[in-house]
Amino acid sequence: MLEIGRQIPLETKNQLAKRDDIAKSMEKLKMEESSSSTTFKKKPVIIIVVGMAGSGKTTFLHRLFCHTQASGKRGYVMNLDPAVMTLAFGANIDIRDAVRHKEAMKQYNLGPNGGILTSLNLFGTKFDEVISVIEKRADQLDYVLVDTPGQIEIFTWSASGAIITEAFASTFPTVITYVVDTPCSENLTTFMSNMLYACSILYKTRLPLVIASNKTDVAHHQFALEWMKDFEVFNAALDSDHSYPSTLTRSLSLALEEFYKNIPSVGVSAISGAGMKDFFEDIEASAIEYMETYKADLDNRQAEKQQMEEERRRENMEKLRKDMEKSRRETLVLSTGLEDKDANVKSMTDEEEEEEDEDG
Image (cartoon, rainbow, N blue to C red):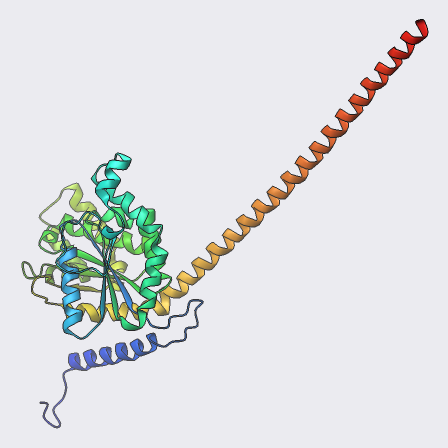
């Protein structure tokens, strides 16, 4: 208990103020009326978990689900990995119930990655039905946790991945979580590779991004935070290496300085559950950012896309109309020419018959 007259530390004041702001903004987020073109009656936050193979995405998502249950939040789990053998949690929506990737491999003569991609493509064609299912349960949910295939490029760079992400983002507040393998990222080159991939996902999806440094029970993520916040610290770690990759990594770090400033990063452990509270605070702040910034940009892009589609449709209809008119004129000319030719032939035949009669 705080003593009367005792001064609250500045850090505590800042944390309390931040949490108050988040709480107020989340109340606004849950309002039934929205000024955007899409009506958000209730706004469960979509958390799409992506990351390199072996980073612990599925285990991390399991921990997220356990945390929501323990904290009284209502979570809804979706599995988009058709190749996973077993799940430690029950998925409310599972791609394996709709598509069997081994059958896709056999039917289309594909390899493992091709089977996963084809399964995701087939599932994406019916994703509007998935959105409808979630919308019906929206009033009963706080979060929708989405697990993605282990091969990150299959989801982040495929057409089906883009369709699924845009379908989520156009209906609900959506946040991308990029899971980083913290022990592996102690290597400077691996760390930079992860940051570049996270940056590419941010620009590809145009959605709020949270970096989750996983496995902090094995290696603490403080080094990564220091490298992101202070270039001199990162530069000092590279001083012992004068190779070309080291020089390139140093240059890339400077280029990503703005990216580091605006992307929240939190250390988590899927095993121990450490960092879950901070992670969900970043998720809530990102959901607010989505409504204030990303949603307007998404609406503008969708309006432009719809306008371009309408213009393309009008151009096609105009082209079809001209082609039909041209075809009608050609048919008329052709028909008239044949009739005249037949008439001339008949006239000549009649004249010849008359001449023969006179000679006879």
